[in-house]
Picture: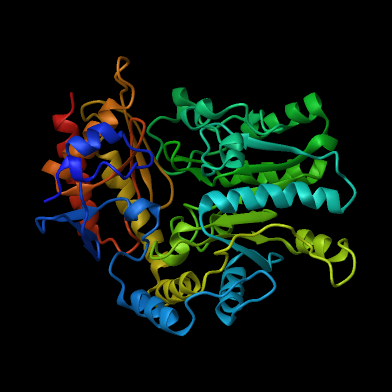
Length: 441
């Protein structure tokens, strides 16, 4: 068994490293709904890895696809060259997006997808002769990855404060459409909320519409605490963007590929954004892959305003964009989602998860419970002397005493089970969380 002094070289992300290395939580194998530790103990996965293993773990179909791809074409550049799987996958993803969004730009992560979308938004307005539009509007409690662009439009303080000054034109954030006084313990997405979208009008009055390029929002705020929003709210955002001519970006890195019961939450809410970002579930977490689905309007502006056919339309990309192994993993993943009806299954299981988490109301230290789609957040009362302590304690108790792997953001326990979860699996998760809550102090 590894000892703390054997694991000093790896600096873990978003982790209190000193505490972890004093008592590591090692995951060595995974299959179906379960992780396994070094002793072979089964740990029920309540967070789909990191919001990504939507089809569960150990999918032979995906592993075989990666293996075949590695033997056939281990790497191919997509700067001035390409390979067939990149085109096949782009067609599959575009077909799942709303009508009029037929183009896909591949990257390697949700962070890179956010960066890509924001760059494309600014460059688009340059292309159409509206170069004064540079402002990028985020939302409170939003998470758009960890690049400087992502944290600039993001709305989680701890992700931003150590790294300023941030990117110019990103200081404005519209409010999260959530009122603790009236919306605590709401089942499902809170109703209404259009007035929160109207805050965009204030920014137009302050800066002028001619300076605003895009608004970026998550269908629900995942890392920020699982805060859902209504269809009416998103429709109002869409209307305001149309009114003033700026773009609407949906960051669906978490919500894409079934978490909201559809390929994308845009379909759930009946709203077509200009750009949809995706990652995580597209490859079931088996290989790093992300991207942005781009509207035809934006794509055509680049194609028609970049000089002759010899000219590069977009000076952007990554060495591993559309990596052959990642594309193979994603194609196999999309086949599983389709063949097993996992998006439809997630819709059916939403109510089971909702009933389960809301049964925890009144348990020790529970300050709020929120759910949206097949995900939920259980907010704990914060220890004013040590913010985040109860969240970390919840992870430890879940792992060591309840055989459960959970995700926390601050003092909020986030649940996002694989889409294959049964009623029995959800019941075990809820019982485990109840046990965790009973031991918190």
